Length: 317
Image 1 (tube, rainbow, N blue to C red):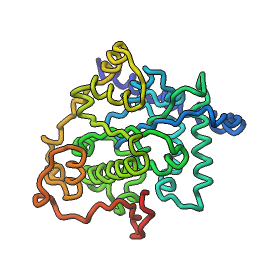
Image 2: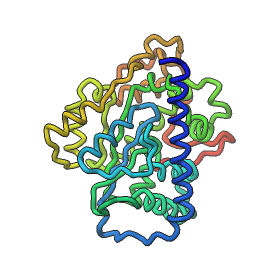
Image 3: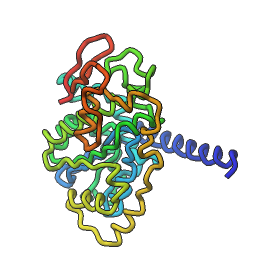
């Protein structure tokens, strides 16, 4: 395909997303405020899917749809992000993590309105449902307070590959606040690696503590190497009976990234000699890492959020 064809396809995709984005915002402004509340007794606990951006989460909602899950009509078809939670987390991400008791009522109301829009086109409100948004992994305590019986699927990919991803949205929008650095984009690979460690450690800790066996951790590499077995594990976790035909179809959805293991050929020293804290996170999630004595000296990555000015924010609990 020529350059014009590639650009044309990219332009079409961008235009389609812009159109969907505009339609959702018009819907949110004009329709959502007058929609009646849903009968709470008919609503099943949701399943949320999250992981660091670039971890391959988009395949999971597609696999869930095969079993009848409602994952939203307002979604970015390229990334499978739910527009409702995307809008909410773009506006309230830091507040949802900070968990100021004085803001809880306002935040929970805004989130319920977003979810009302997410569920608005459901053919049957009693269907199993959920959403996918990578940043959901940072706000499990907030979501679990609203949906105490919710489930969370946490997809983890080797942070050294993730650090090389062109997806820098989280770093650009919230990197200063999350890492407590004035200019983390100066070394984006190193900053991405720290965000990966902090975010995934936070999600695993909060998921295990608050959700127990309703929290499921999956490996992206395992998903690529053994897609059928990994997806079957996800379906079993959700209590979803699946046929061989569904598993066959779901397996075909998994297209392994060509960048798996790309960090090994990278010249970025921070990927080959990570800090002790990053090494600890890598080992926790099943990845080989250098011994601590080989790591570069660094300030520990604490499970709390530091502001660039030096003030410590609320722990992500």
